[in-house]
Image 1: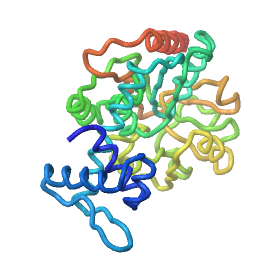
Image 2 (image 1 turned 180 degrees about the vertical axis):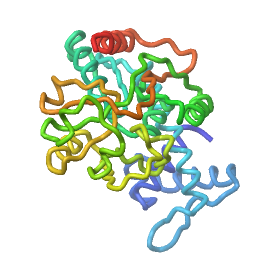
Image 3 (image 1 turned 30 degrees about the vertical axis):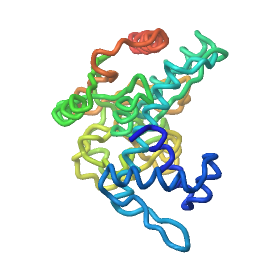
Length: 300
């Protein structure tokens, strides 16, 4: 079983035709059929069902090709990082929906410039942040650990060969717009928030309370709105007097001056930090990103 063979069966599955796949791969159809037979014999399964109308992937084949895709993607990541002769270096960071993490990236890009680097920033779900770092799609992931989620997240990180490095500890804040009826209060309780919609980031298939981006994930909210992007949070705050719970570390430069973070009466500590591969040495640009992040957090 070789990398080339795995790439070939993936192409066949995507093309849904042996003829089309052979054209794309610049090989003969008999040659491609032989590759499939060899792989099926080696794996002990039928990967494809053949008929006059073309081919279809079997249930066993779907699982096999899923693993094959992971192997090919991992090789491509390895090749892009270490084996290519491209002039541009790469840096990627995955994060929860944190404006301060985006701000640190902005400062990084300004400092090192964009002529020599190809950047990627992923604002995404907790499980995806972990997955992106595990698969080396991102060098660094930014998320938080709390007393509630630490057992689950630390176990998951350990299973995936990752480690959590703390950056700061903060309290829980209520984030809302300045025109909200509660915006002038020195602190806000969960009881006072009862009649207003709470906004929470959807966690997709991994929608576990332990993966929630917001504190108080098990609270029985009377009104709850699930969303996927940070801009929608700001729109709903204004349109519906909605709110969300956060770290209180808000970048006004990016989010604008029309929103405030007020201490939650029933506050719980959040330990914000970054994840990386255990034992891995960060790249020079990764170190610069963390320096910018620590610099911004120290100013709060």
